[in-house]
Image 1: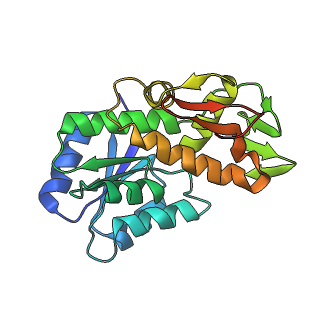
Image 2 (image 1 turned 90 degrees about the vertical axis):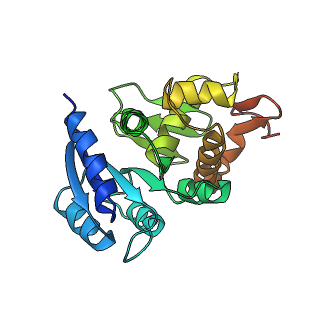
Length: 233
């Protein structure tokens, strides 16, 4: 039985109740909030494992809440899925760039939502004890969940951390977006390949401070390669 705690931030009672009912049936512990203010109180009292956030909320936007949670030390690694009727690409990119780990478009089935929740929880979970990885100037320390570069610690979101770990364990090999989705997000997960590009850009931005963004190379027409030598292409 899954005991992960999910916070639903949704102001429409029928939608919130439908989600809560199905999550309870799937074995999740469920908490609910109707707006940003009440969500903040719930999270402060007990940080959940994942938050479902509706884009349109009465006191602020779900996107602003997502951005705020990712800025704060206590919640920067919190898994977040945005729920919205906004299906256009621009909104999806805004949501993912704002810190969401996934983006689910209304209307959605309970089965799809639970599948996406499980996928996000899998990839945001604590990594097993492993030896440190060193490639070029980068050192990944799984036991401490830290990335070091030039003696400094670089801050990564949970998905970017897992993406970099995959790259560092498989240097010099070209991977398609589909292969990266399978290895980092997991098979049978309903996520668009465009999501890979968004998270690669976030990873590059974090590595750029020490010039290590050049390690993540775009191979035109094929995908991405991680190499401590050469340029991005």
